[in-house]
Length: 464
Image (cartoon, rainbow, N blue to C red; front, side, top):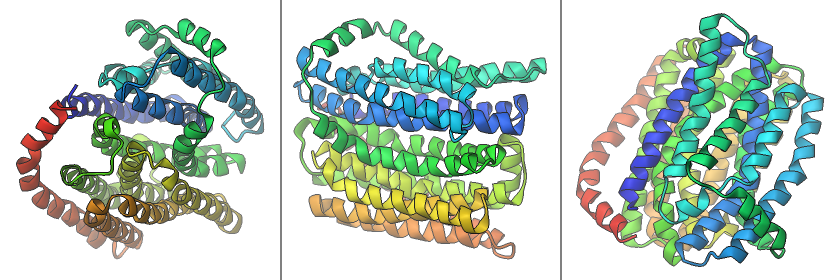
């Protein structure tokens, strides 16, 4: 499957999944009380962190081995064994966090722990490494669409959405996708029982940076929930959910390009650099435009999708949306490093960003109280720092990307500064218009380059 077709499949699933997320937020905030909604979103947030912990290292390594023709039953069993070891290692921690209320509530958390066990045996990375994006794309869409439809039904019926149902629906999606695409989890579990210890070092090296990034995004939710503010945790989690929708769109090209880049394990070529430059410009276009819209209409957006139009919620929305740009750049940078086999280079930037985000969030909550806008500010600052450090590591490995990395970092800084400026009442309109002007300038600059490289990208993808 070509890069172009893979990107189209991922793109369709991502857009439909993000649209479903908007419906889920709008319906869920109306089908549940603010506290219950916050508990469910906190449990979902913990599940997302644990999914990354279980999946990203094993799936990325497995897909890379498939792309290079190096995966056999023995190495498949080793990866599945590592996945299940990670699942059963973190499941008790998830239950404990549920008891403490950090992940919302135990009732909301238990079904997601069951889903995590199923997810450990869930395998979309073997077909993905072989160029078939359909199983992964189907899961991405269905996991958002099903809760959205069910929550909408509860709103129509005027009934309360029960907190455990969200996790139960996730379990249903995993089982259905396994059946539809003919997955054989029992066979793979038998291979895991017979497997050797496996490549733990490589899995952890690949997986640790994304886990730290996901933990950074989830930190605000856990801080607010642990402080006894489930409604505020729900507001922040909903803002981050909107952010992850943007990030998922930003990750389409990076994800689609990965199998081709991983085949040879080389640094970026001149042709790759041209594609990466376009991808980074697309990321900036989406993030700057979305941040500008949120700066101008934040209250209306939070009222529609989160059920509140408070000033703190609108501020949190603007700041978390601005974080989409450094986070999108981080996705692109880290995929380049991992594809070339330099995943360890991303460890320090991710660690520094995570420590800065979590540390600043805790300090802000201790000094200013558990406020959603303060933890959002900690998020955008920590991720901008991580992007700057990761850019330095990337250009050392791939000098061809120096210009693209420098330009994307400069734009990220400008967007974040304008987002902060929009928080002042007398600067809100000017900053919002400035953000939209940046998006328009990028679009104008991107159009001819995209047309010139469209044929080249198709040819490169068809050879992958």
